[in-house]
Image (cartoon, rainbow, N blue to C red; front, side, top):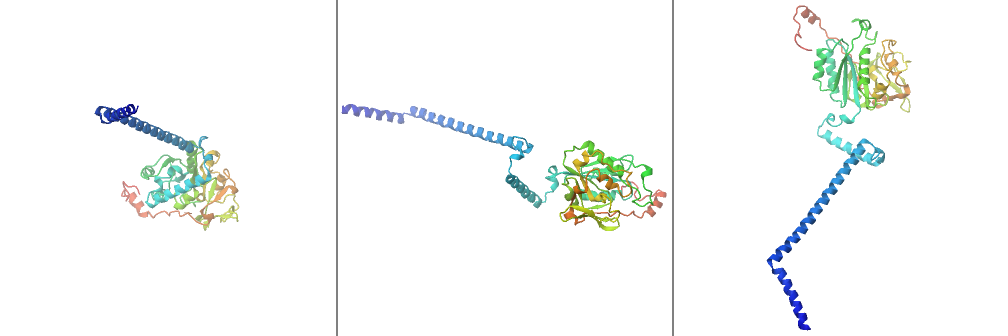
Amino acid sequence: MNSNITHKKRSNDNAEISCSEDPENMSFFSQGLRRRKLNLCSCSSLILIIILITIIYFSEILLFGWRRGDVFCGPNLASETKLTELKNKVNFLTSILKRFGISEKEYIDEHLPKIFVVTPTHARPVQKAELTRLKNVFLHIPALHWIIVEDANGKSELVTNFLKTSSIPHTHLFKQTPVQWKINQKDPRWIKPRGVLQRNEGISWLRENISPTEKGVVYFADDDNTYSIELFKEMRYTQKISVWPVGFVGGIMVEKPLLDEKGRVRGFNANWRPDRKFPLDMASFAVNLGLLVRSTDAFFSHRSQRGFLETDFLEKLATRDDLEPKADSCTKVFVWHTQTSDPDLNREQKLKVQGKRSNLGMEV
């Protein structure tokens, strides 16, 4: 019995030895192991790839849904804490961009409410100089669209060329004022309202081309005033009508809204007819874009009593309670009625008679 057992063990031992030492058997065995390892690796890689694709796919769906604000992943599902964290990250990235001198216009235009500036203008020796001063301010304002309306029967070459090189998004319109509505050269500036039809043309363009749901604000900027960059930062988020002080108007240093202890407009320090419902200058207010587009009866009128042009317009849009004080509770001045004086061109008139104009073939 023992000899049999011993023999079997030896046979098993020999079998094990032959398996480990036979080259053919060894090769077959190794290849099988390699195939199994490769198959396992391939399966693992494939599973990993599928998992990654699934994660990316659903991440994109979630992100897209959050951006759209739909039911699947709308803003309502985002907590206030998460929104605050996102805002802080945006502010941090914005500060980095500013630190490296990257202009705001390169990264935030599409996210800001747009400012539509309506500027009436008319041909005169200082026209290009006035528009250039405005352009140099507007170039610093992101998300701004400039609507220039000429008081003429067509687009002038000077304004057309000016806008082509302005690098500012713009719309060029024209609307001529009837002769009987124009002021004479020696008349005081206040005797008749100016720029009425031109502002109305700009308003009509907005209603025809801009959706009432688009976020923005409308400002009527005459071309003979001086504007600071800060003014446009103040007005951008206007809900209805925003207001602020204006320098050098009404015969005093500054006209401004007066506020009560709760920061609401309770009156005005206007020098002329402070009893008007809105004793405001054209440069002292901005109107929410949607409000103006929807209020289809809100236009300026030549029939307005002298000094009541702004009041009659604003009465169609809001009440005093709707006014939003800006400029640090109306304690700062960001716009001035500077009104460039006419240059002395007596000598030029003589050259013109002689056919020797100094600006022959030039735009000045």
